[in-house]
Amino acid sequence: MKIPVELKHKPVIVSDNYGNIDGRYAYDTDAQGISLGLAQWNDRGKVDISAKVWRHTGEKWSRQSEELPIHRILDLAILVCRTKQYFANEGYRFEKLYDADNPIIDRIALQGDAMTMAVCVENPKIDEDIKLFQQALGNDDEIISERLRRLSGILKEIGF
Image (cartoon, rainbow, N blue to C red):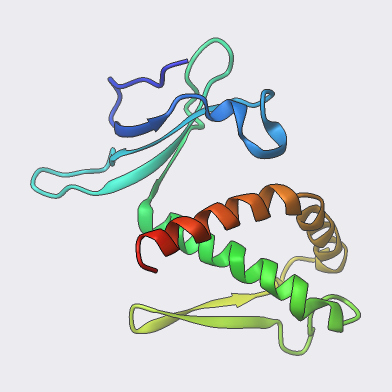
């Protein structure tokens, strides 16, 4: 199914068959395509690149399709990688999988400041939810690790 090109997000690079590889939802997902293109919020004279996940209900393209600036996607990738690292190397040391007295996991330097990563202790069910999160992370380890290995290889190929 071809993603629409007449909407505000202007696709430039597309994957029209994303529904076939959407992790555990492959072949049974409403996320039918992903694209990199010109952001829908662009103003005259200012152009931003964004990524978009295109959702299709089976009848029409959904307004729940998401568009994100590239830097946010990379920030999310950093968050995913550091989270995976935390649960593999640190979280198991704590009875609750986190230090309730100091829930900060890391501060990752970006743009002259730092992105603070912490366990969300404001969540009233955090003790239950963090265990479910860890379990889901483990259940999806093969899917996540495959993508991280591909990302690592590509990053090395382009000099990072």
